[in-house]
Amino acid sequence: MNAEIIAVGSELLLGQLIDTNTSFIARHLAENGLELVQTTSVGDDLDRIKKVIQEASRRSAIIITTGGIGPTEDDLTREAVAEVFDRPLEFHPHLMEQIEALFKRRGFRMSENNRKQAFIPQGARPIENPKGTAPGFIVEHLEGVLISLPGVPFEMEYLMTTSVLPYLRRRFQLEHQIIKYKVLRACGLGESAIGLQIKDLMKRDQNPSVGTLASIGDIKIRITAKADSPVEASQLIEEMEKKIRERLGVLIYGVDEETLQGKVSHELERKNLTLSVVETFTGGILAQKLAHAGSHAFIAGFVLPMDKSISDFLDISTDEFISLQQNPQTLADRLAKKVRERAQATIGLSEYGKVVGSQGGGESRIETYYSLSMEEGMLGLHHTLGGELWMVRERASIIALDMLRKYLLDLTPRE
Picture 1: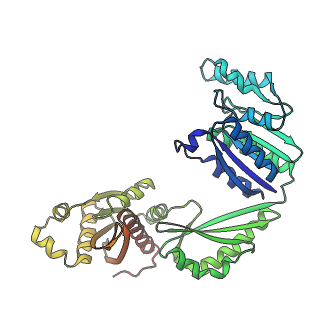
Picture 2: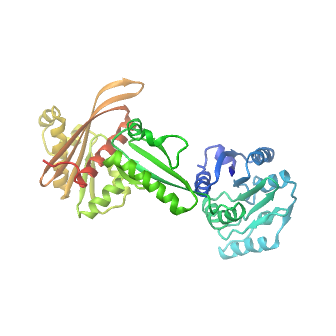
């Protein structure tokens, strides 16, 4: 069963708003066995909206529009739908009553413009909207259905889950068409290297299917299963996940929306440990990630972008600092120990980076050093990284977190 999404609004084309509605709808359509064949963004122009709807109706049985059903002159979706399907707009008194009641509850006076929102195409099913002033509607026609939803994300999401999906399941008997997915998250190897290890599991036209998606330092491995029931789909995913984990082992740090910093914070809390960090190269990215995790285990972060700030932090002379720079790993070790003692933390984590050459095109070659300091000893790591500075800093922060994660999991021997 083919489906399409049409996002209406000139603000989307101008880059003033990010279209999160399409991704939300797409995810829920896929989970219900519907194949999304196209998504379209169109501005607030009546003829263009009509043309997009006409083209979509020739391809797909299910069309979902978002946006363009507000009270202003440039909200034109309802007019476009009415003209495409030759359904004159009709006034619905009960929708008007609901809109007026919403304004009254919120302590606002309703504008006359809002009366426009009580009109929907003739014969359409209204979708009552208790979260806002824009009711949606469903137009059933010979080739399928068109569903119009408001563009305000929290209103659209509410109507999609409480009204639209139940309707689609009944209308198209989707109860036995289930698509489920799970995302495994990995770091420590690039996408191509991970792809080689699971190459045979990524063959086309198999169920469940496996695919990868890479971002800087973080690889997502998506497992998608089609089945007649949620239980069967979950079993298929579980079997494939087991195979992937057997291949990748410790490279996998989490699932779905879990983050590396979240996993590290959880392990710190579980073991009743505290952490302080010092960064000389990543500019606070590492501390920011840990702070966003919201854990009480992360107790201090220091950013030392200049040589003088590093030597002052270590309380050493310029000559001693210059000497230390000849052995960068020792320098990283000294920083980790100092930050642990200064913050009175269980673990001190340091990162030290040094640009050693240019690769052209704005890219640099950087030697990066990492150190963990614990009461019982030190743990060091070295990586040579290349690329644009912002990219290398992001990768370096992930390497530091992953080093800490593996230590916390007792997968790295201690000195």
